[in-house]
Length: 188
Ligand SMILES: Cc1cc2nc3c(=O)[nH]c(=O)nc-3n(C[C@H](O)[C@H](O)[C@H](O)COP(=O)(O)O)c2cc1C
Image 1 (cartoon, rainbow, N blue to C red):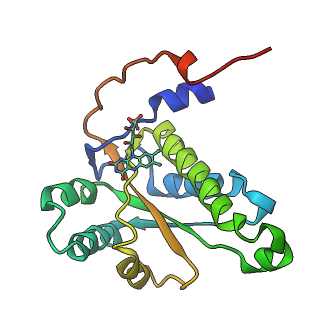
Image 2: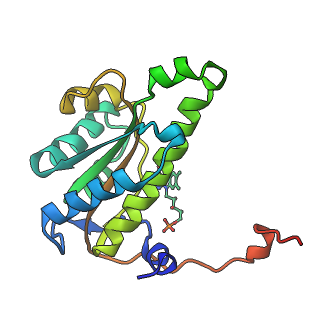
């Protein structure tokens, strides 16, 4: 599959279930592979990924519901809990880089966010190549404390995004094509 075909297939899948079309270890391997391949500024490897599966997946979404004290509808939370797992994306800014390159110190957290976005898209697309649907959610920072506790994460980790994934139970509506010349300017 070409990169264009893979990106075309990657969509926001809200309708997911626990029936993965591949073995769980293939999913884990794909996530590990992509985490290694995606670049980062100064090769600082700031991205951290937690893959919640099985009972941890259920506990995670129950914790999200609790953190919002009922302000997010139970059905919405349950639609994410219905998936087979969730990829939690954290950044771990490397202080030693900030000290070593003091003139760039403020840029490192920004670059860590950018590198994390690259990883998020890669995993989102890589999962779809395996026939798995996912979406990107942002219940941080409200849930950060509970997530740190549930997964025993170091204080240096900052939670950036949550990607519930699972078997595809329904396709999203087709997206409208746009006039791309409004966004991509070509000059010679
Ligand atoms: C940086 C970023 C943040 C997003 N945050 C959310 C979110 O918090 N909740 C959500 O349901 N979708 C979120 N989305 C998904 C977008 O709404 C979605 O990608 C967009 O509407 C295009 O649809 P598609 O993913 O099907 O191509 C996010 C996407 C990106 C790239």
